[in-house]
Image (cartoon, rainbow, N blue to C red):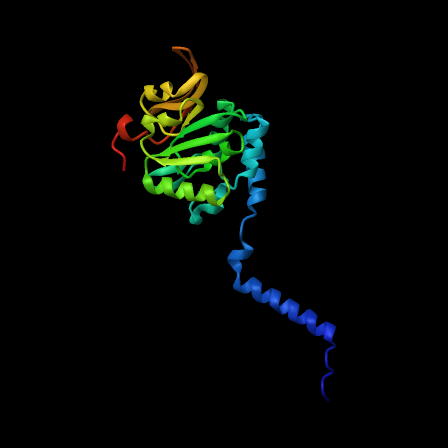
Length: 249
């Protein structure tokens, strides 16, 4: 006895189910792709907005929830991009943990019309966070391959108000000065005077100072010829290199 022919609807359903099973078997990596949007939301809620850390600046929280952090880490580490820790980005450098990025940005108190100087571009993530909060970001990276990669990534992702330069951050960016604020993401053993000179009166600087065994994050404010200094957090950053430290890699 010949089997009955399946009608067209049944055939379509079977084909669809078979295709779905085939895709599930052949594409396990795609099925396991993280939901980066959800990961960023968890990062903000669990690491930043919590009572024991207390990041409250609305613009900073919005930027941290919006900027695609996974785009600024090596592809092999993207599943770790939103964890509460720094990650290597090559050349003995790191992308800071999300909390430190948010904390430093909030302490800098960025304003929409600000022109910001960043020392230590690294992956470009901190510059991307600042991009949506201020008018212009000038960022200097001493490791040339990192500078070129960050510049390309920032342009690709649409952060067009960020200018990246390969150079020695200890010297600053004198022709673009004065700056409303300066953020330093590598640690010299003292506050570089050239950076102080490039800060406008009443400008702010956030900078880690010290060696690897004893670093503190300082919030500075320039008041005429005086520099007010407040220690805000013990930290651990990679050392500043170039003129202000040991030779660059």
